[in-house]
Image 1: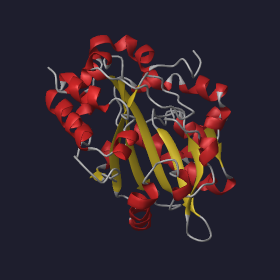
Image 2: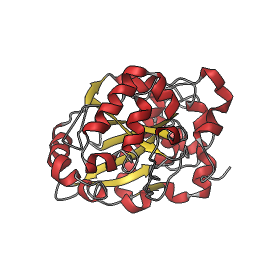
Image 3: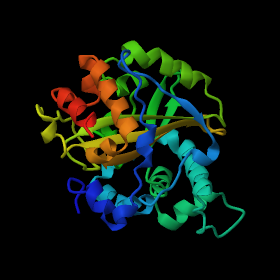
Length: 302
């Protein structure tokens, strides 16, 4: 199965009715402006990389996706120590350190020797999350220096490597105005051991995991035409590594048929209210432009 063909439906088919969509209850749905919010909350260490029934099913596809798209995993030399530290941290957090052969060699070195992978590649294959590593340059400006991004949402790591936070988020209308200074301040002040998380969501025409290019959703006029849409969400976390000081950004991609959202009536109503209060820019952020009225009507109908 190629990257263009890998879908949530195909990956999750083995789970049947056991598929868990409880993460829909976490959707942030504050009404009205501003169009973009950080929406960060503190989480405990054991909530950093939670596994579920889909985790291993998704992980099985990463090696082939990376083989087909080598630019999904990139690292600059300046990131070597940070990537090794991240690999050790993830291996310990997930318990996936069975390959260890000597207590005198650190976890990262053992794992890399066994797999013949770079540290960031090995780390990305341990969890379903995508991983991004950021370090400050000589001027103190944070830049993307490494990553394993296998399930991108309308972007590619190769376009982001080496870029600043502002440059990375340039395609997001309103980032510089509404979030730029807040994100910079948060990066400057986040201490090791303090983990933060947020969640976003969008409406998409399909459930493909890999989206390398920006697309515009089709316009929909009637609520009866909404059923084929999917809600795509990213659970994102941010933390600072204690030894190298690198900032680590994780992205867990999750998807649900819009019918599953409507089943959760309080959440569906909150999403509908959010769309009803959103500005045109806010609707575009959610990939809801040209179909908001139909979505609102659908979600408010039992």
